[in-house]
Structures are given as C-alpha cells and as structure tokens.
Amino acid sequence: MKVVIIGAVAAGPKAAARIKRLMPTAEVTVIEKANFISYAGCGLPYYISGLVHEQKELMATGAGVLRDPNFFLNAKDITILNRTEALAIDRSSKHVRIRKADGQEENIPYNKLVIASGAKSVRPPLPGIDLEGIYTVQTVDDAEKIKAQLAGRSPGHAVITGGGLIGMEMVESLCEKGWKVTVVELMDQILTILDKDMAFLAQKYLESKGVKILTSTKVLGFKGEKAVSVTETEKGKIASELVIVSVGVRPEVKLAKEAGIEIGETGGIKVSDTMQTSDPDIYAAGDCAEKLNLLTGKACLIPMGSTANKEGRVAADNICGRKDSFPGVIGSCVCKIFDYNVARTGLTESQALKAGFDPVSALVPMPDKAHFMPSAKPLILKLTADRKTGRLIGAQAIGPGEADKRINTAATAITAKMTVAETADIDLCYAPPYSPAV
Picture 1 (cartoon, helix red, strand yellow):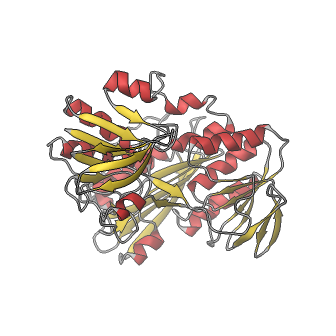
Picture 2 (tube, helix red, strand yellow; picture 1 turned 120 degrees about the vertical axis):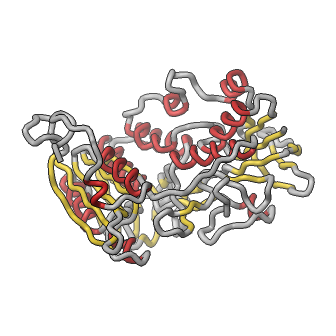
C-alpha cells in the first residue's frame, strides 16, 4: 500500500502516524511545501509574545523530542518531503506531481491519497497590502518575521485588522511588548463567535487595557514609502508601524479543484463522514475540508487544529480498512485575552434564530468556585436552549474565571442532545476549591 499525504501540519502527520500504526508495511510519504512541519499553529501568538521561549517548543513531542523529518523517518518510518510543492494530482494514473527545493520535478505514485492542504490566510487586495511590516499569522515563518520586527525597534503603533480569535490573541502579544494597539473590525462587534452582549463585555475589558477598538469600520488601504506607516480607514488614518491582517482563512483547494474533485458549497472539499472525497481513493482532512454542523445539519467551515487531528485519524482508519466516521462539529473554541477567558460552543442566540430555532437564553454571572474561596474568580455564562424541545443548543462564557470546563461540559451535553433539565441533573464534581455547589 502506497499512501501519499499532501500537507504536514496537523491532519497530515496525524493520518500518517495512524496509518503506520494500523498498517506497518504501508509506504507513507508526506509532501509539505514549507520548511516546518507538525507545528502548533495555535501557539504562534504565544511564541511571538515570548511566553513560548523557543521555536522548537511548537514542534516538539510532549517529551520534548523535535518532530522533524528525521524524527518521522526514524521513529515512525514515514518519509516527509518538506520544502516540496505538490503541483498536480493525476487521478487516472494515480500519482502526484511534485517539485523539490532544488527545482527537480517527479511523480510519486499512490494507492490512496490524503489531501490535508489546510487553509490560507485571507490577504485582501487593498492598496499598499504588500508594504513591509504587514503580516498574517499562520506559519512559523510569519511568526519569525513579526518577532524580528518587534526585536529590531522600540514599541510603536500596531493595527490589527479583524477582531476574531487570532486577532484577539495578537492584541495581548503586542501589548505585552509595549505596543499601542488599535483593532479595526468591519462588523459591528469583535468576536463574532459570540452574541453581541457577550462580545461587548470583551470589548470593554480590552479598552480598559488601553486597546482602541473601531467596529463597523472598513480598512481602505495602507500607506508608506517602503514600510507601512499609516492604515487608512473610512473613519480616518491610523499611525501604524506594524499591521496584523487577521480577517479569516480560506480552504486551500486548488489542487483538488484542478483534479476534478468535488468542492462543497462552503468552498471546502466535499467529504463523507469517512473523510472520503468524490474520488473513492482520495480523502481530505483538516481545514481544507468541509464540516457538518451537528445542530443545523448544514455544511460549514470551522478551522480548528483539534478537528483536523480527529479527521486525520478517521481518514487513516478507513484507508486501513477499519470502519470509522467523523460525525461533525458544534463549534467549540476558547481564547485567552489577557486575564479573561472567552469560550463558546454550539449556537449563539443570534445563530440559533437564523437556523430556525426558537431560542431562549439565560445569563448567569457567578464565581467559578465557591464564593468564599480566595481563588474564586467571576465568570459570566450564557446558555441557550430551544424553546420547543428544551434541548441545550449553545453556551458562551467570559471572564477571568475558568471558562473551558463549563464549555466542555456544555459541549458534551449538546452533543448528547440533552435537555436543559437533563443537563441540570448531571452528577458533576463539587468541592469549594474547584466549583460552586450549583
């Protein structure tokens, strides 16, 4: 069995390792255009801030062993061709055309192929977008360029275009370095993963930290002689020696599309619950593939490293003849903003309305532990249920208290299709240092 995998960040390495565990005799080759492989992309803001001290920590195992091509070859018998670009997929002859770093091209045959090409940061075609000092935050190379600029000059003014998860995490990273930060968001709120009332709390907290936030504001372009010095918006000009473009990502589907593989309505590769594409010998996993939203029943794009790893495992299982399926997602995520924790799962109240539910919500502010414990911290929790069925369909949390375990509990209940009444009766742990009694 010859298995070729395109992409070596999250889903690709997971699929490769799983295939070798289940089918040790398989020949597994992974193709990666970039130099770095199997790294924690979600950790890049913390590497930029200095919380993560060394680059290799993003690419190490839990035991501290660097996951480079030699590691995969020696420990797992997996060949990784980094700095190698996949040029085309020939489905009729079942090979992938590649170009190596030295410019040489060759064909690699496959019996089964996994496309794990990920997603690429959106870089809008604005005037001046190619000036020096304007970055996206997606790869280790991106992080190194930003770190170099931060180290090479005294703190100045930074602009972050986009108020999503990466943008919010970069706010903290830049403020920790002493930079004055302005966030410019096209929508009427930051953190559109939350309802407006919850996002408003995050905005007020950020503003209390000295961050300027402009919502309902369109970026028109950038100006500067060689490097950026001004961000132009419809509400005026903003001094900016550094710009982070964080307006989302798009699935990288060029190879799949050119090979005639079906692309879904969302722009991601259409897959079954076994991660199989329209070609029975080709699978897709990770940010390049469509997901199924378990609450709406519709296709969606929710790029998460956790999901990519699950999908990579499922693709590998089915390639090796072991029946497995990935049911879908409900949109769980968590984000750290200074001392605040922001998390959500399922549908927000506004999303539930658009999806045809009759939502009813409860907003509860309370400590994350027994109120008399010195370590107790406030947390605001918003739960959303469907009025007709009583099912819990969404949860949001914000505050310095522990948000993740509440949202994880809610995610479990939502996945199990529990009603609010059933959720209230779950036998959860209680002791004053860990939680309130209710």
